[in-house]
Image (tube, rainbow, N blue to C red; front, side, top):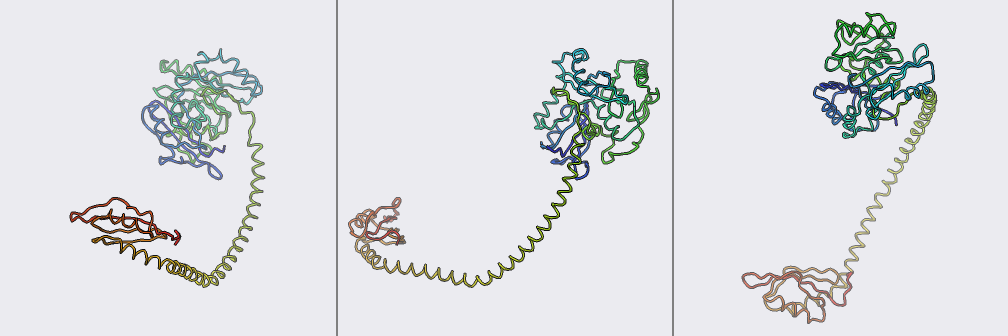
Length: 445
């Protein structure tokens, strides 16, 4: 399935950041389809109610993918260094060490593994895991709102910020301090390949303990002690400079909307982390290296085919226009003949009616004469109708039943019966309606 829309979400305890992108012909554009909401923004409120509110305002769509980032405090991260081995071997090696690496039972957690190839060829692995009871309520919201199949990533926000920094081509390696909810923060180390280290700076630490921990991490990665960066300037870190090449200028500022960081993971094309209980996977083959040339060739063929099709369509339109002119000329010639045909049809119908009346007229005169002889005194008719051999009479009489019985004695009639009930007026006159059939008369007359 072709993914046509991406939505990045960052969910904190008291606020939700979101940002959407739709694929255009040549690039991505800031937008969210099927919703009247702004393409990016911040929703204040308690989690997970803010997440449910956002998903309910966006209708489910097959071509859309959500990428959800959570604060570092919701995860545990362990880093493992491996020698220069293929990624498949690195995955098998780390998976075999999971029972020792993770301090929680594997049945109680969701986990995934983020791999980065270092400049010296070694493999850096981050084992990212979280308690199932922390993640399942979030997954349930996506399922209940109909977006379960659209969720494609669930990871710490530090991975999203690393993808954004890589997109913007900042100088690497870089040490980055990320503030989170409850006044906690995180120290992340980034290489061009992605995040290679993450340490949660606990609130219980004293300033000296936090400073010592950060100095130890910086020394491990050969970074100067004064090279800490952050989204905003503080006593411990420098403000992040303007991107050398702002390749994501169409997106909002990451300082104002961390949903951009979650969206950057989807735009980067790198390994996606998804803590939902599925097996960890590594991307060992880049399909675009094979598909891009094929797509270019297909585009050329489609362009040639389109030109030929346009020429054929032009010729077809010209032929259709000529045929329309011919049809109009024929219609003008045929129109007088159609009028003559309609007159002939009306004449034929009128002639048939006259013939029927002539055949039936003697019989009708006899019927009405017969009825005139049989009706009792004080009987008269307000309406009569004849359809073929069926006749309907409506009128008034002082004794409707006597009138019906007298008609039944006539040799000209059969099936004489009242139609509906007989009503009696205060004056004693009865209102009636009866039907009868003429003998020896065809029903079609």
